[in-house]
Amino acid sequence: MDVVADLHVHTPVSDGRLTLAELPAAARSAGVEVVAVTDHDRIHPGLDAPVTTRDGVTVVRGVELQVETPTERVDLLGYGVERTTALQAELDRIQTDRIERARRMTERIEDRLDVSLDVTFEPGVGRPHVARAVDESEADCDYAGAFERFIGNDGPCYVSRDVPSVERGVALISEAAPVVSLAHPFRYADTEAALDLATSLDAVERYYPYDRPVDTARLDEVIERHDLLATGGSDAHDDRLGLAGLSASAYAPIASRLPDAQG
Image 1: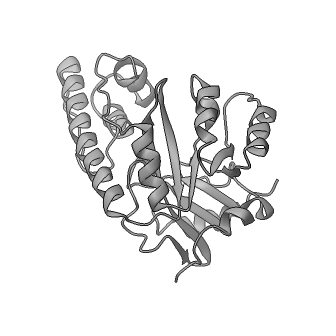
Image 2 (image 1 turned 60 degrees about the horizontal axis):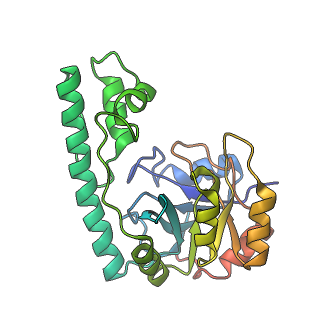
Image 3 (image 1 turned 45 degrees about the vertical axis):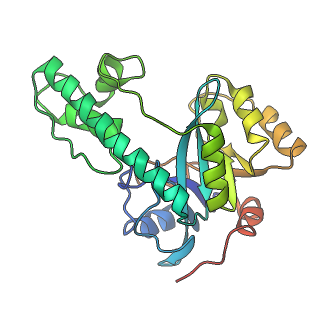
């Protein structure tokens, strides 16, 4: 399938590497015509409308929000996001928590390894920033090792984030965005519980570059039975777009729910 729309891309506003200035060229190189910028817990400040055009590439303003469910934490993707007062207030609260969390993890690693880490504590900071600082420090530990030894979910330097409940998260994004999707359902420990949640949303992420075989037939069954939209994207944290996403025909029903592009 030719990927025309990559609806899951991160930038340096959270933990990605691809800047808005670099995005059009990266999209053209991959043959992608539509990109959704879905930074973690942030609406990209450089996007001034829910849908814009940058150098011929359609850019959808999105957000990826983690929420707490009765079984585990899952991620929601909002597309064509408006900056509502309620959503922005919650995102600001989350960013304050993210900064404090990164500071605490950094201090724990520095104490444990007796090193100094160069981490900038600003909105968007997360574990990847801490891991990169470890990799670039004098510590005998690389990026992957930082997660494996220190800041993985069960690591000695890990600090949990304070995320909204699923009820509050869904309410906030549904008010702000015309399309709300469950991200990467097969990355969760309890996929069935996550898919149950998806039935109350607009969509589920159907196309995603998993590193293992997944039951796409089960996913298609849920999408058909509950009349959900199918979204998809590469979850790019670098400049490689189009590793997964939607064809032109698959993107059309999503585009019909989004406002027209500005610019």
